[in-house]
Image 1 (cartoon, one colour):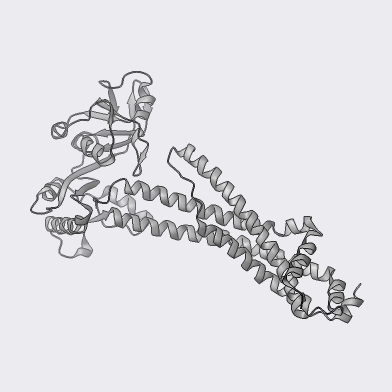
Image 2 (cartoon, one colour; image 1 turned 90 degrees about the vertical axis):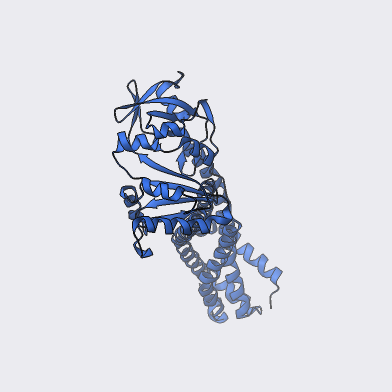
Length: 415
């Protein structure tokens, strides 16, 4: 029986005889492993980014949205047109007797329109709601001027607070505070400019315009309902109890006795984190599985080359058997050559996937203006090495078996 050291040396020599063919053989494995590494790395980076944005709201934050809870991507648009959350609901939720652990209850509306100033027009994110609540929830400071007050909300004042990108786009180097912008033909006096903040919980603060929700409802949207209500519990420990109180209060307000017929749904940060993490994890696994199909193609290429190698080395096989090599020795040598090929491809693929992940993460961070951090999960490396070895075994076994079964006499006669 041939020693392991001799077997490795023999297999290495056989692969290095034709380096060009060996390199082309592992190309499919390199591409497949690099793609898997890239998908898993970017998927984990995206998951961390989104979960980080969700955590920005705080674990004590509860979001109430109108309509039935979406079960698919097409259902989300329906919540924007649902009108089940109204002022009487806000008043009920603010009563301590109904929701004792709630410290803040604030409604918000979304205005989809352009903002203009002296011929300059842009389409920022326009939210109607409490500027003071918004600043407290997301730790946003005012850079110039001040936030509008709750009095402005009650009086339906036409005032606005804008982000730095909105200021730069519309006013350039000029002072924006005290100037008026137009939204749907109505003038809004700018009372403040927020400090640069970037992306926070899916909202781009720098590209945002905040106005009182009462003003938006009365003069811009012509509605008497809200698109979202944010409730903050007094601590993370009371979130579950607060959610239950909110649901009971709104069902009583709407005359609902069957929870399956709720015309609203409640989202907690913990629930959203678990749901998003599950969705992104499943999506990443699915994409990795799809990309891994290329490894099968690479494996077929390895098997074809190994079969050609068996044919080319028929006399070598006969000579080795004549000198005492067993079927097991021949099989082990060719199987080891196959594994060495795919493992080399796997290591190169991991290196390429690592470099591409770094470059793409940096590019996305610069292009999107978000904190897209590079993540290189160890599980991706283990998977890459493991799959490469498995491909080598699966697709190298048949050629190895074929080589080991050759008759030494017939092999020596082969021309």
